[in-house]
Image 1 (cartoon, rainbow, N blue to C red):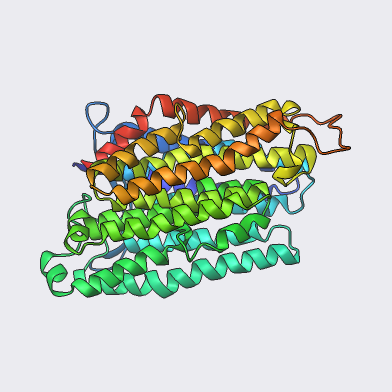
Image 2 (cartoon, rainbow, N blue to C red; image 1 turned 90 degrees about the horizontal axis):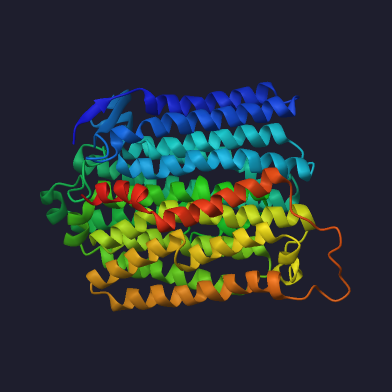
Length: 499
């Protein structure tokens, strides 16, 4: 693969920083403030999209890799940006969804007359700065720096309401994410550098950066370092380090959408899978028998989080535990170490993002229009809000894995990957989790469209949320269908990863 130097990845990051600054400077003028957010989001997406022909594999593109060194600290240790097929999957999705989130947030925050909207928009931009920085990192050190930036910049978003519940959720959020990163990833990173002399990601997913001699002589230590990385990137939501995620639901719904679909959790699973594939590599994971045990370890999260979701009446809480479960699909697929399994895990980064942001957008639209949070209160609401609940139904089908929505592509590859690996146990887990998905998603749509309103309640005057909220959720739902029917664009990048 040919490597070229380009300033474009740095420009994409600087746009988010500049957007945050301009938002703060124009805080007293709401229209201008949100205009700067939109300009930053569109510009970032435009810059990232302009790199698609360079990165897209031949014959559709040039199949090149972009590298931009920024600071050299020690031999094999630098701050360097890199754009390859794997990073483009995350970057394209995150930057596009930021555009939708800008429109949606304006309708939500103004509709509820939320305070501190300037701080909210500025931190939102900084969170995207960190997320895209993670996507464009060339080594574990650079990725760690941007990972921590995401944690710090999203803390004010979780604590946005500045009440006891908000501060408690934000405290749990920051403690979980910073202590695991500093207590597990940081020491692992130091030892990896000592063992290998570098933290640069490998050029392909097979070799990793550990020499064969190190794997043979220090197999136990390499295994411990692997475990530290899996657990240390706690944004991935793997149990038992998942409690921060439901606790962060105290934040406004646009923040929940950011946390669960775009920036935070995707930063977690992206970092985890990047390290699995480009630090340890398929060969090392095979040699140390790390793959299948990892798959079964996260399979527990897949099932248990779904079971907990069944018990939640609060819609955002149910969606939160759904996220915990769905994130582990990504790690599980990669851990199967078969080409189809890895492809299923990676493509779910995009498929889950569009579907989950739709679900959270719907939850926020329902709250703005009705001030209802609990599923038990939503019977019959679908007839008053058909677009919102229709989009919710489409995104639910994707989470379940039903055709023709995006989640079906994920399930197909994961099931095929489990069969290729000869893991009938994983196959049963995937089928069982699908039934659980039906169990906690289908009743929401059924009650909304076919249920009777609670006794004594009449939905007179209830209508759809503002168009600035409904249009983004409809667009996200529509894209979930489009990439379910035509997955080739994303799969071109995914297949470039597996070679």
